Every structure is written in C-alpha cells, then in structure tokens.
Length: 512
Ligand SMILES: Cc1cc2nc3c(=O)[nH]c(=O)nc-3n(C[C@H](O)[C@H](O)[C@H](O)COP(=O)(O)OP(=O)(O)OC[C@H]3O[C@@H](n4cnc5c(N)ncnc54)[C@H](O)[C@@H]3O)c2cc1C
Ligand SMILES: NC(=O)c1ccc[n+]([C@@H]2O[C@H](COP(=O)([O-])OP(=O)(O)OC[C@H]3O[C@@H](n4cnc5c(N)ncnc54)[C@H](OP(=O)(O)O)[C@@H]3O)[C@@H](O)[C@H]2O)c1
Ligand code: HEM
Image 1 (cartoon, rainbow, N blue to C red):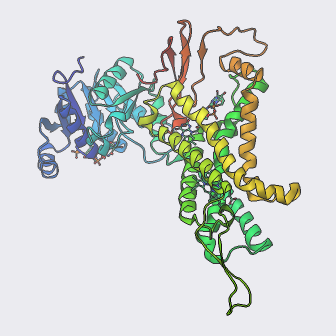
Image 2 (image 1 turned 180 degrees about the vertical axis):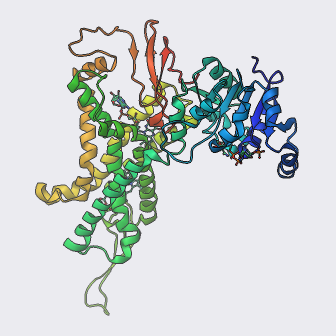
Image 3 (image 1 turned 135 degrees about the horizontal axis):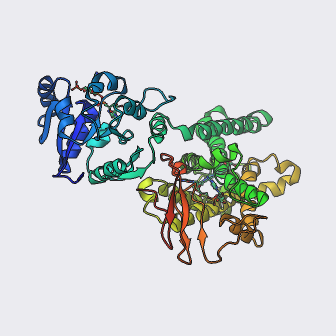
C-alpha cells in the first residue's frame, strides 16, 4: 500500500473539530481526503458555513469513506465506536484504522484503541495523533515541526505506514511499540503538570520555613524593619534563600545517585523510589529556582540604594564648620555614595550566577535543547551548574563573611547567609569528592557498565552513557554496537522507554 501524497486516498470518519483540522493538514500535504459522516448532506452545508471551502475534501457517508480508503482516521468519540462503526465490520477487513481518541478519565483498564480493535477485529488498529490538538493540527508551519506523534500498533507494517503519513505532514514520529502502549498514551495527555506538583509543594514548604525564620530574626528577636518593608525588602530574603535551596535540590539527587552507584557497585540496580522521582523532577526544580532567582534579581536591583543596603556603600557625610550661629559642627548624611568592594563583588558574583542560570534555562526549551548534541548538553547542564553553585555561594559568602567574622562561630550559625549556603555547599563538596581520583575513575567504570564482583570488563575506549534522564547518548571509540535507552520524561516530554542502537560516534536516536 503506497502512502505517498497524490497516490493515496485517506479516509476520516467524523466531521468534528479534529476531523476538519486533520483534513486541512492532509490536503495541504497533497493527500486525497474523504470524510465520512452519518449525515453528509447536512454536514456539507454546516461545514461550508464554518470553514468556507474544505477544498479537495470529499464528504460522503461513512460506508463510502471506508470503501474508498485503505487507511482511515477514526475521529469520533470512543463512546460512539460501537453504535457508529460496528455495522462496518466486514468493510474494514484488512484496512488500517487510526484511533485518535482520548479518554475523559485518567484511569482505565483497556485503552480506547483496544476497544476499537474489539469492535472492528478484522482491521489493523493504530493509536496515533491523540496528543496533537486540533489547534496544533491546523497551525501548519508554526511549531508543528517540533511536535511528536506517538504511534502504537500490533501491526508493524501499519505502524510504519502511519509513521510515513505523520512525517509527510510535518510531525516527528516516536514508535511506542504494540497497542498495549495506547493505554499509557491516552493517560499521558490527561496528566496535568504531573512532574511539577512535588517540586512546587516542596518549594512552597521551603519558602514558608525561611519566611518564618526571617520573621523570627527581623521582627521577634530584633525589630529591624517596619511593616512597610514587608513587600519587597523582607520578601526578597526568603525568596532568594528559597532560590538557592531549590537550586541545591536540583543538583543534590545526581550526587545521591552517584553515592548509590558507588555503594552498590553497579548502575543497573534501581534507585529508591524517592530518589528516582526526584531525579526525574530536576528540570522542574531547576526552572522554579531560576524563576525565584529572577524575582530576587529584579527586586534587588529596584532597591539598590544606600538606604536599603547601607553596609554596601561608603558613608558620605558633609561637615558644616561651626560658626557664630552654631555651638558645634553640624554633620549632614548624604545619600550619594560609591559602593564598597563588598557590594560590587557580591553583585558581580550574583549577576554571573544569574546569567549562567539563564543559559541553562534557555537550553531546556525543547527546540534549543534538541539542537545541542549530547556533549554540549552535558557541558551546559553539568559543568555550568557547578559554576552557578560556586558563583551564587560566593555571592552570599561575600556579603555574609564580614558579619560571620564579627559574630563568632556560635552566633554566625543563626545568620541567614550562612544557613542558606549549607545545602549548596554540601552539593559542591560531594561533586568535588566524586570528581577526584580514584573515586571519579571508579564511578566512570560503573557508569560504563562495569559491575562489582561480576568479572565484566569494560572495553577501554568505548563509553556508553546511561541516557535515562536526558535522552541523549554519546559513544566514542571503537565501532561497537550498543544499546541505549530513550526516556524523555526528565525533559518534560512523554516518557517513552524504548531500546535503540547507537553506533560509533552517533547519538541515541529516539525517533522512528
Ligand atoms: C534552569 C534549569 C533548567 C533545567 N532544565 C533541565 C532539562 O530541561 N532537562 C533535564 O533533564 N534537567 C534539567 N535541569 C536539571 C539539571 O541541569 C540536569 O538534570 C543535569 O543533568 C544535572 O546534572 P548533574 O551533573 O547534577 O547530574 P547527572 O550527571 O545527570 O547525574 C549524576 C548521576 O546520576 C545518574 N542518573 C541521573 N539521572 C538518572 C536517572 N533518571 N536514571 C538513572 N541514573 C540517573 C547518572 O548516570 C549519573 O551517574 C535544569 C536545571 C536548571 C537549573
Ligand atoms: N479536538 C481535539 O483537539 C482533539 C485532539 C486529540 C484527539 N481528539 C479526539 O478526536 C475525536 C474527535 O474529537 P472532536 O473534537 O473532533 O469531536 P467533535 O467535534 O465532537 O466531533 C465528533 C464527530 O463524531 C461524529 N460522530 C460519529 N458518530 C457519532 C455519534 N454516534 N454521536 C455523535 N457524533 C458522532 C460526528 O460527525 P457526524 O455528525 O458528521 O457523523 C461529530 O462531528 C475524539 O475521540 C477526541 O478525543 C480530539
Ligand atoms: C542565581 C542568582 C542568585 C541567587 C541564588 C542569590 C541568592 C541570594 C541569597 C541566598 C542571598 C542572602 C540573603 C540575605 O542575606 O538577605 C542574597 C542576597 C542578595 N542578593 Fe542575591 N542571588 C542571586 C543573584 C543576585 C543578583 C543578580 C543580584 C543583583 C541584582 C543580587 C542581589 C542581592 C542583594 C542586594 C542581596 C542582599 C539582600 C538583602 O540583604 O535583603 N542577587 N542573594
């Protein structure tokens, strides 16, 4: 069966929003399209009124539509499969039916696609396009080229044909294997910000804890600010403390994963559930940290003056000499002053950290991230992240250290600057420990597949990285074939764990 435009007639059962958008997209790519309706005459008029000319699309009965095409999109709701399609059991024999439907509820025992296969058992059912909205389908030429179409079917030939059509109309294709995956594909589109819930709750909790501490320090233990400063000056403190804590939480799980790998002597043992979920939420933690740091940067810049940050500026005074009218010198404070080194250095470190963080954030935009190869992505996310932690810890140390020296070891532990860098310091120390030989070499061996006590030898010049978290793999050295895993979940996309092959110097290709 040919799937090229101009030689193929594609059927669409249904004339709703999705069907109309799909028909436009298919005809634009050069396909002949036949739409099947229960009431073609009535729909002809109403569709004409709404959409103007559906040029090149033939509107017929469902029977005629199925008769004229070998590949048919089923663009009706699951509840209507039985009543609308059952009468065409014989007509669909050997045809490919593409189920685009979604469920109303997240949890189900069987997928809509499996239900369709049971209604029309003589057809080859393919699950596809359900993650593409009618709106995206119509926005041809915008971001559509970046959209992925996930395809599942028990018939590999049908899967390949539907994949060809998806590619022809400008989508990228991800092979999800057999029809069993349809259950998951339908569930995924119903998840609402699922990876964001835990990071958001945790951030909220951390912010509240820091806020309580700030209230205690600045309003209960000592009255340092009036309530008028609550909106910016006081709020800025728990915000930046939460930002630095959340950034540390972004990079801590990688180190905990390393501890597990060294402890167990293998990378093949699953991580504890909490750590696994945490590893998969690093993108969300990182982006939340970036948003908080942005707020802090702007708020700090708005308040930057000797009134708000007196210790960052030189004290400038005007001395009026005593004269006949004054009994002594009159000293007037002046607000125009240069910054002391501490203020400038702290700002430089903060600004550097913020800009590096912005670079990391930009690479998590899918179109940017996908333009980087594995090494570039690792360089930004692993190397720059260390620079971010070092500069922001430096930013806080510069402003806090003079106070710690004055207060002494016991009192400085109450200081918010010291408290806020404890977790980031822990991450930095762990990273340094794991990057020093012999531990670094041992960890590298484990990540390349070596297992303690297994007797398995790592090929010296080959290195295959476990790609679970980033969907990219690098493989250098001798031309050896190895398998890599594609799991896009950490990058905020539909998780698809499939096993593919990487060859020398190639990347793990997660598309079909
Ligand atoms: C602003 C911002 C945006 C971000 N955007 C993204 C993003 O788009 N996508 C993203 O993934 N992260 C994102 N992050 C988080 C972070 O930058 C990356 O996760 C980065 O790869 C962490 O590097 P690392 O060196 O700490 O850990 P890694 O070197 O990645 O991990 C350390 C160890 O843990 C193991 N490991 C890690 N995860 C897994 C896993 N799931 N299964 C098995 N083993 C694992 C590795 O094999 C390695 O041994 C973002 C962070 C920030 C601040
Ligand atoms: N809209 C989206 O963005 C989107 C995105 C992804 C997936 N989907 C899926 O695509 C399918 C269609 O969605 P839609 O938004 O296009 O729905 P819709 O606008 O409600 O259209 C459904 C169409 O089904 C046809 N139909 C066939 N038998 C029917 C019956 N017994 N009762 C009622 N209608 C019947 C109707 O066409 P006739 O009256 O001409 O027969 C109707 O126009 C759904 O399964 C949906 O989950 C939609
Ligand atoms: C990644 C970016 C940054 C992080 C994580 C961060 C974090 C912090 C932390 C934890 C503090 C200590 C809180 C306190 O003692 O009050 C702080 C203070 C401060 N930072 Fe940043 N910072 C960042 C970037 C910046 C930038 C770019 C600026 C410049 C505009 C800046 C300006 C300040 C100021 C003025 C203070 C003192 C706040 C106060 O005393 O109220 N920071 N920052």
